[in-house]
Image (cartoon, rainbow, N blue to C red; front, side, top):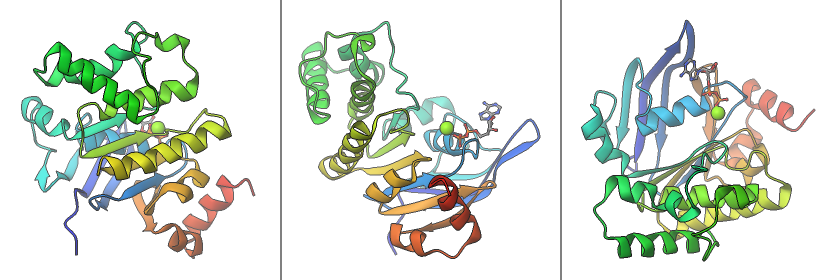
Length: 247
Ligand SMILES: Nc1ncnc2c1ncn2[C@@H]1O[C@H](COP(=O)(O)OP(=O)(O)O)[C@@H](O)[C@H]1O
Ligand SMILES: [Mg+2]
């Protein structure tokens, strides 16, 4: 049995009487692309934020490479967070900063690299997402697909071990959806990372995943390879698939 790179044990989180996560268990294996699917408001973003240490669970353990980050204070957490890159829902670029400064953001926050080194890292990160030489552009000048790529470049600038994507294809047209899916697959191999992708886009989940996990009622209701999920007899899985495909 492989040692998980991320493991959630009995993680619970309640907001104002609503139990969003309810003793949730999840293991993520090194190098895999794990997609978490689930309806709107089921807690997918909360789950990613708990893995990042941005939200503290009420109880349970959040193990990153075997170390529980749940009880950690901010100083120690910052060190662990360097291992993780996050592509936020809706890209969340800083509109007042150029593309280059957006990608450089984490490098300036977390490293003491020189200006020359930062520029080189930014160039490399943009090249990896297929956007060379756009450092001076403003985010507002870019299409939705390009903004998403810049958000991915920003997430990989610190060379993370684990890449988290929150709804990376939402709001994109079909050709950009396919390009972003290919990019997620490509980066997973090239950067030798583990990818955790949250989406309600079932087609994309089947396209990119090594394993798919269904989040429902605060727990991982089912987990398996795409073909296992496709053949699952669980009524929760069948209902989600039918709903997502519009039946
Ligand atoms: N910071 C917060 N304060 C209060 N409620 C929150 C907070 N973050 C999320 N929630 C609630 O938790 C539930 C799950 O939210 P979320 O994880 O964003 O769902 P989704 O699966 O759509 O990403 C929602 O009911 C949401 O309103
Ligand atoms: Mg969300």
